[in-house]
Amino acid sequence: MKKSAIVLFFAALLSIQAFAQSVQDGINHIYAERYQSAKSVFEKMVASNPNNLEAVYWLGRTYLDQDYVSDARGVYEKALAANGNAPLVLAGMGQVELSEGKAAEARQRFETAITQSKGKKGQDPNVLIAIARANVDAYTEKDKHGDLDYAISKLNDAAKIAPTNATIYLALGDAYRKKHNGGQAITNYMKATQLDPKFAEPYYRMATLYKTQQNWDIVTENLNKALAADPKFAPAYQELYYYYLLYQKDFAKAEEYANKFFSSSDPSVGNDYIKAQTAFVQKKYDEAISVGKQIVSTAGEKVNPRVFRLLSYSYVEKGDSATACQYIGQFFAKAKEEDIAGNDYILQADACGKDNPAIVRESYYKAVTMDSVLANQLKILNAGIERFKAAGKKAYEADLRLLSYQLRDSAKAQPNPTELISYIAVPYYQGGDYAKADSISKMYIGIAPDSIYGHLWSARSLAQMDTTMEQGLAIPAYEQLLNVAAKDKVKFKTYGVEAAGYLGGYHNNVKKDKDAAITYFKKGLEFDPENANLQKYISLLSKPAAPAKKPDTKNKSEKGKVKTTGK
Image (cartoon, rainbow, N blue to C red; front, side):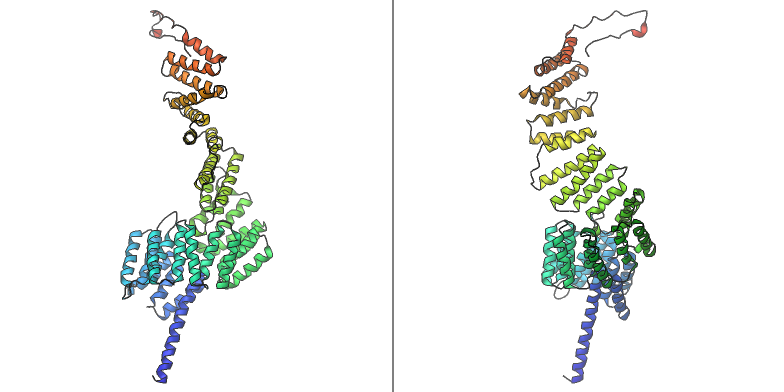
């Protein structure tokens, strides 16, 4: 080979390597949330070569990762107008359509992309990753626009083709995380780090997953591993800033990490958020609000949702729950699912639940779902239980106690079944939710059919649901109560008398069967022979019926009426 040809060959090779590195540079910027830097990289590449479809795809992804869906659509539409069968761009457009709720159109894009990407060696793993990533990113608990099972299937296909591609396992971890399978998520994140120890993102994802469990040692360990892999990985610095600011209360250390974050991230008005956050922790709420509002004003629609969260916290501390409620509402409307933590729902309860205990209850329910560790879930619920207990909201207190019982039961923690009556059915009854009180009482009866208390509170609850006795709702329950009480007439005297009295009253007042009523009242005397009321009822009902009076022809308005005794 001629020397000149060799020189040209190596020059071309270096050019290709530089080009590839530029793509990876842009991708690294996306992972590190330096979106302006990523946008700049990909825009330059596309400007240099409009047919660089990989750069086009990642430029669109830069917009999608910031939820700028219309901007991404514009990028992809322009590319597809020139090349309608570009697989990566088709996958990108599918993600746009998923974000817009157009699942059928998106699936067609994905299947077309797969078909168009097939070559002699089979499917293109990068296209499969892009399709899976689209479904994972678009999926939320609220909208469920993406298909997680479809994503996992495509990633498994990709893993067969490219088993050493760490990005596949990062995406698998994200998919399983959204399926609330934390174990599988961690397994795949760890696989990604094993394949590429310099890949910072999976370490960061593991840190944020363990953060939901407040396992701070593992959180900080993984954040530091992310920084060892990439010393410019800004999100890790930011998380460490929060850790030292909010949990360790080490303001000097927090400031150190804040400065490292600033030097590793794109210049942005959003960075002023850290100033607002620091002011908040130092209880300078007016300053935090002022900086937060300035960020919202400057950033407009592109403001980071966390600013709304901070404003809500600040107004809660100032005692302005109405304004706080508006801001937490804006936070939930704009935040990505993975950016929402359990404490955000507690904030919602504080901000919006002042005169609406139903919101407080639902907020605690949602907060519990954000954590997978039983001890943490119970801690959240206990705080809510004490909150409702102090406010005298018995039925809402029972709702949270029931969830606590169910969680412990599911975890084989062997909760005491008597809690069903003492701590759940009775508060439901006291709070006026008689249907739930009856349901829980029957649950207890299923566990302890010979116990008096399930039958007692079922009967009392049904009686409150049928105060006229006309439906006879409580009759079977009171029959059971009477039978169980008869096993120990001394210990259960009060309950036996209650059951006999109710049954006697029902047969006299509703069924008009005095003999049956007397029979039940006599059963009551077996528990309490000196009971004056039962004796009086028996005496009254045992008297012969008074003879019917002759019609008073002088007063036709009284014709046909007969006065009776018996009550």
